[in-house]
Image 1 (tube, rainbow over the protein chains, first blue to last red):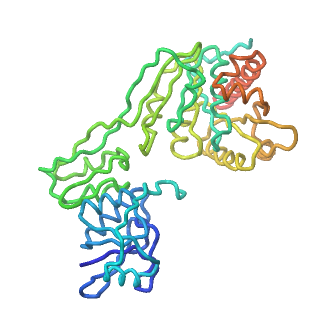
Image 2: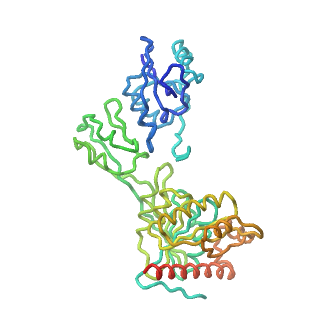
Image 3: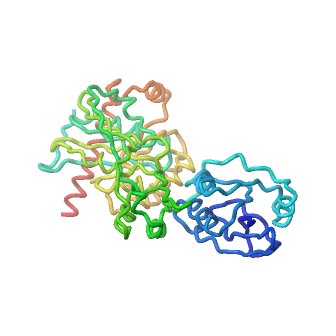
Length: 122
Length: 296
């Protein structure tokens, strides 16, 4: 099973990014193989709908699970429709969250916010 | 009573803007419209139109405004994603073998329909708001209303400003706050812009942004200083430093606040306010005439 996380750097030492749609990179971690891959989030420079575009890329990556601090409703709709499960991070550390997921200690993400559309400055 | 003359064949469109909300755009535009012999008041602040609260227009007619959004014929869609890649607003996603349209993100450009190689996309109408039109004494009142949750009121503003204005009428355009696309759309066809300023540093900052905007659009403009108190007025200082014509001053007075907060129109309440705004309107007309002569 592959899990996806929004991260600041292409490294397992990286911190987890707060924004799903506008994170610089996504980490795709393979739980069985214990391997990782990173890809650039091309949605970061979008004028709008970044969450939708980022979610599409995560779905296309083949991940079955997304681990995030928070998620906007458009992105969540795409992820849910594609059958991905969403969990809430317990800290900013990638490795701590991978370990917690492996032990079944992450809880499902329940609060989906309405997005930051135009409220974070244009 | 001053005499207003409008050049034959030219209806006059005056936009009132301020940058910061709560500065007095509606106060100025409502009262200028009420002071004119015949006027059309156009509320372009479609996210929270409030001019109608003052005018209380009669015989209101409602026209729904819709935009085009894509609709997919799933039997024709082969999942090529040309539309998904095309959409700069990311209003489309291809998930689980189906195309998903995010209606509130769509900007109705129609590009996805044009580019679909399978002709699987068509357009349907989606209502995003309405225009209410009614009459209040000598003023025709047009109000644009954007439905909650919609991303852009620009289609409504375009329709509002397409409404016919009679030759002897003055159109008073009450703009939305800020200086973004929606304000640009509102001032695009204006013959003259009135910038309303309040004596606060925050107000002056946003005033400087709309000042930049009207210069960029090459519009003739002047300032009205609202909420004037004795002593230093940062808005007046800004106008002096930037050589901005000051058209008039409205005092910071409890009486004005009381009349206005009861949704009554100053001009219709007391002769002194009628004189104030009729004088202001006359001043604006002189400015417009001067600009027209200078540019012809």
